[in-house]
Length: 417
Image (cartoon, rainbow, N blue to C red; front, side):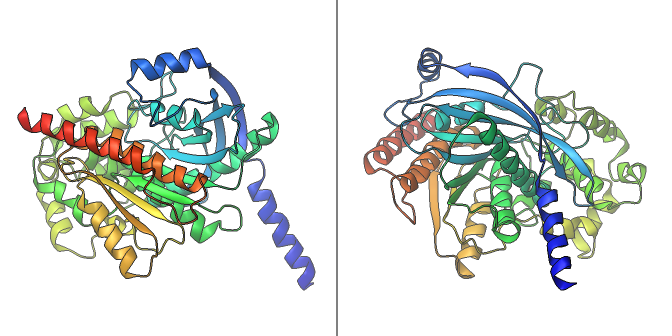
């Protein structure tokens, strides 16, 4: 009987992992001519990011689950290098904040498809997750929610494994995870989820979270009382958490958290027809001013207030990574405060993490300027593993020196403005 039970359990596990992929289709092919033009038009330096492979881009649908067990359909993209002369590694990429679905002919958010092209053209098979409720998916998006970011990232990796079998792509056993802004939060979520729940299926070689809000209940919470450039953050976050945790008994009760003049913004977010700029223009620059005073006082002074507790649950750093992690950040970041990375690194090191790398990109760059250089440093870091460094290095000395020189030049220009 014990043997039968064991076999039955094994079949359940196999069944639950099978059939993650629903469908996929090739939506674009980028040949050398197109990529050369793209590199030139966007000022991508080939010395730093070589262009070796042509790229096929696939769009896919796959199954993943919400925390309550409900199965939902998520979407993603897959950037596949063609005829790469060396071993192909896998990279899982997580994009920054978006509030709308991707357009019919679009495979981009925030210009971040450029990042995927840079990696894919140099031999990385790049799996981009849209997250639950975004991309071409229906339903709500659980913004900055650790469990769903992690689970949908894992299920995306399962789905591309099926695509690899179908298209005959051979990849090695290296798996890299990265992302910018919300994607930085998601990158650590995916890494954590793999290590703690799916180490029998996947092994992360290294991760590089870039400018992520890792300390949701601490450092990032300071946005509540300052003039903040992205006030959409609060209602977007609260709405997603309400759907996951049912903090309030109904969505109507939840709406009453906001002052009457701001409740309509929740409808705009739910409709997914307005971008970040539109939503920001409807809100006060100090996020706490959109909240009814009673609820704001609960948040500030009641440690048992459920919203406070779920913020803590979605901090991404209270675990000890077994694989190397490089934290990229800029001290001038006005959207995701750099101390998110400092807090995360210090906690991990204090609790025994052996390979935590501090990659301060700039002392002055803001959120947007930080991204380009964080991506370069991430590529150098990942490339070091492909070049045989088991624990990883910050990257090629010459390339690092070139990027640091450019950063210093750009910082001087910004100071003169």
